[in-house]
Image 1 (cartoon, helix red, strand yellow):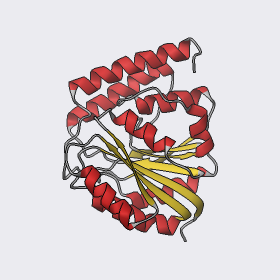
Image 2 (cartoon, rainbow, N blue to C red):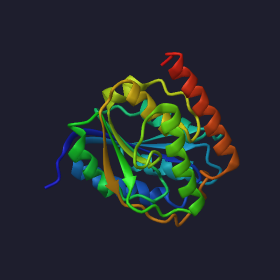
Image 3 (cartoon, helix red, strand yellow):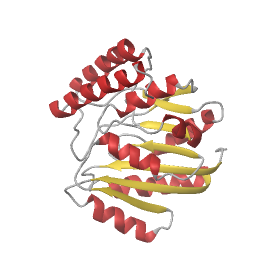
Image 4 (cartoon, rainbow, N blue to C red):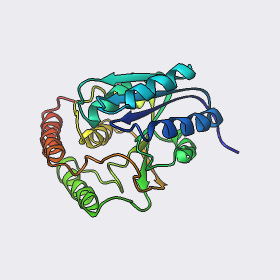
Amino acid sequence: MVKKLPELSIFFPFWNEGKNIENVVTSAVAVAEKVADQWEIVMVDDGSSDDTLEKAQKLAQKNKNLKVVSHSPNRGYGAALKEGFLNSKYRYIVFTDGDRQFDFQEVTKFIEKIDNADIVIGYRRERKDHPVRHLLMNLLKIWDYIFFRFYFKDIDCAFKMFKKEAVERIMPLRSEGAMITTEILAKAKNKNLKIEQVEVSHYPRKYGDQSGANIFVIVRAILESLTLWLDIKNARI
């Protein structure tokens, strides 16, 4: 029997996911109805240049539990996650990417652990990405261990659940780009928050483009990481 939460906020960051958004949100609605008494889904459009925002607005018109937050122009993955956190109102908050590379039904694994943790993070059993992204993931593990002294199986896995009070303790978040996940975990460690890990499935992307291996994204992440390290070193967070 599926354990039900009293309330749950779900959010998805979307950037040019016009071919994915309807499937992602419709599937999440079906799951949300089974796992929470009260729930909401926040669709965060990060300045998409396709029809993502238009489709999000149409979905929200059909269901009072859906709402849309939009940036223009595109600001980055971190900015989208920050908006998701800020616009989530319920006691438990979960997010995953809007690219259909995760099965949202696996949220039940996170629900089973969240009562005994502040944050539950996923790790991909078998990552279905380009080899370059595998390399970047391993480099990130090394980087984060050197600078922030933490190690997790899959730092940037985009499937995570939080208690709302845990989010409040790590806010405000500075990173606008890909280093947002490192910032979340570094601040959680700094605040002595309890973090659990769960294994999740990962699927190949069928539609849309990935930006994680883009040189601009990588350089931005490095700069944000160094800023975060200086903030922690100088006790500004």
